[in-house]
Amino acid sequence: MNKLIMSVYNFMSSLFGYAPKSFMTVGVDDFETGIQGDAVQLVDVRTASEYKEGTIGNSIHMDIMKPDFLKKAESMLDPSRPVYVFCRTGHRSATASKMLAKDNFHVINLDGGIVAWIAAGKETIVP
Image 1 (tube, rainbow, N blue to C red):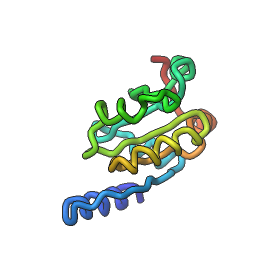
Image 2 (tube, rainbow, N blue to C red):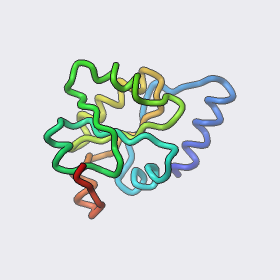
Image 3 (cartoon, helix red, strand yellow):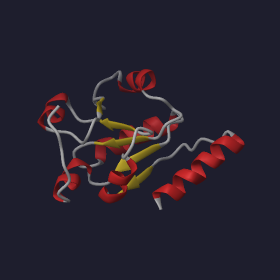
Image 4 (cartoon, helix red, strand yellow):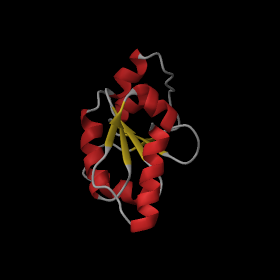
């Protein structure tokens, strides 16, 4: 399903120059599938102390609570590649996802955040 959605997005983008102004929220399994490989950007929007406790994969840390969040995202992220976003429970990442989508990023948000990820028995790393 995730591959189909990405295919439609890529087709529409290349054909019409279309970029969605919204984002998708997916469950743990679809999120895990989506972050495989080098084609995506994985962003942890929690605070620095939360990030240091453990994160998902090789995520980029960008604290949504910092006033320069969007400026930092614009300078560090490639808008031509999907951005997978998560926080602790999914609320802050939904806010970040809205901001990034309005800025023409293709965003996928993790439903339930890292709490759901851990509850599903998925691996975290300490950066």
